[in-house]
Image 1 (spheres, helix red, strand yellow):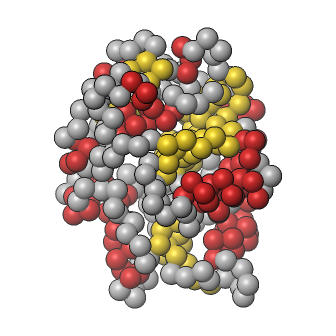
Image 2 (image 1 turned 45 degrees about the vertical axis):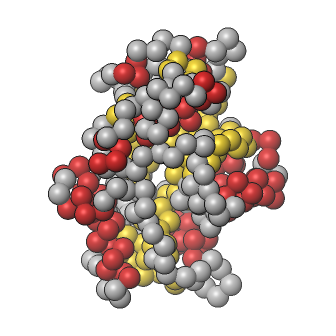
Length: 308
């Protein structure tokens, strides 16, 4: 794979030397113990006040890479970290190049281009200084027990070659007080990875993929620890070349489910496996679901069949 060819780093095809990649384990200072959550964000201002606080408490460091936001995302990132007294644990940087959308657009871009998803991800994770990393999205919110679980793992995962699968449940937001939680989707992707030469990004068909040794240890966290915010009044699929492709590829089964639920809810239908949740007066629906509803739900959480 191309990403393995650079022993100390990668250079991009366009010659933007300021955005060449130096692998963090190849730097003289090496890697320090601890965990870093890496968020690649674009126009995530509404979600980040919910996303960042539990990550800043649970992780040793949080790295936010802004990719051309126009909604004030960088300002929200700084303000949220400072308001919670965690500004010292935050690094905010930017990546100024348009990145190919998942699907056919991604497939057409060379993986050493600054516009490639795999190059973008490698650049982001090359900014990490700790031995372990969490690949985190700008709309993923930890529940109360999820925050405790991620914090507890922090002192254990850095010294061993372990990847961690984090289940997450789409939470479709109709308003500040009403949401729809999809428990008909069984989804537990690999989000925790060591930082090292065996764990870099390369190009796959629809998206980027992180390489892992065959014999690496894998840990799966229980369901109910994380929700993924989706706004029914927004464009939740703008990062895909063509959402119609969800119906034509077996690799897109998870996105197909999200597409079906999203459109059904917008049309007024609640699909099987989706739970309507209304927050008490004065409480935001995201806080209610992550701090009360999910932590109090019976365990094991009743989640639908697995989808990829």
